Image (cartoon, rainbow, N blue to C red; front, side, top):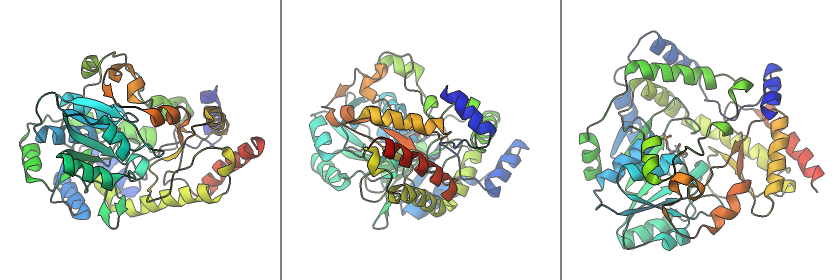
Length: 413
Ligand SMILES: Cc1ncc(COP(=O)(O)O)c(C=O)c1O
């Protein structure tokens, strides 16, 4: 029904998609050149140099996906077999699969109200076999306990891989997310703040990590299939999308038919590949525009926060602190029903939302992973969802969202 309504909103030009890349003439001309057969040499090394310069990292290495970069970093540390890696249960297959593919044991830990690992959650997940923590800054917000988790890791001799896939450009006192730990990870794929058809990056100051990463044999994707992916991404997301293509939320693969980590290794396996020149070229354009992308996202988030309409929804808003709003997440621990009816109200007005991840411990392939107590994750995930704040949206579109929030608040007071 909602899909049909969304389709009608699309026909009348009033659908408001959750995802849209912030592409200008440079990105579109790259797509045109790549379709015309250009191979764009030198883009990967150019992107690596640019990201290393911006983040003040000694080394940067482009890979096909953020998850590939996580896997390569884990492999580089050469942990003994059976070593454990702590990660938030509130995350996606792109975080847990690289741990499994590196031959290590994921341990699922709890999150705080921002959906990031807390110090207490990491402490509760520790065991004598723990060797690393994957510290994500989800939705573009620093994990509040970043410094304490880094201290704990130092004291215990653990490696910290900072997953900044949703946080390119997030900074604290001028220091970039991704540069606090032993290795940092970025992604340029679907749903990230610098969004394109794909691409990932590993940054590090550790010479041992980069020399392993650079010497690791890599597969390469055929140019034809990269071209096809880039073109289909452009057609699907480059324009306000047609309703019949379905909602952003529907496309997140929550379940995959696999019932154990071992089976997931077959059905959800990904190939660690080099970064294609085409995706690197697109990512370079986005990197060059990241300050504008971030400030537009922040302006849209500010419009929602300052509208005074969110308080009346009864939902928890993004907490204070540095935030680049890759996602504007709303959640509740007391009233998941209110969250669902607000989701319905937004969808019925043609406004796409993104539902939260189903936590990994509730997804069949990963339910067998060792887990620490997951109290906050279990309380918070059922009512969590994100509203659009992407940089293509302006004042007029944000007003439409605010109007729905205002009506909803009035009805629920
Ligand atoms: C927080 C986080 N980490 C890692 C990944 C994996 O990135 P990629 O899809 O580029 O492999 C994603 C995206 O799926 C993500 O959102």
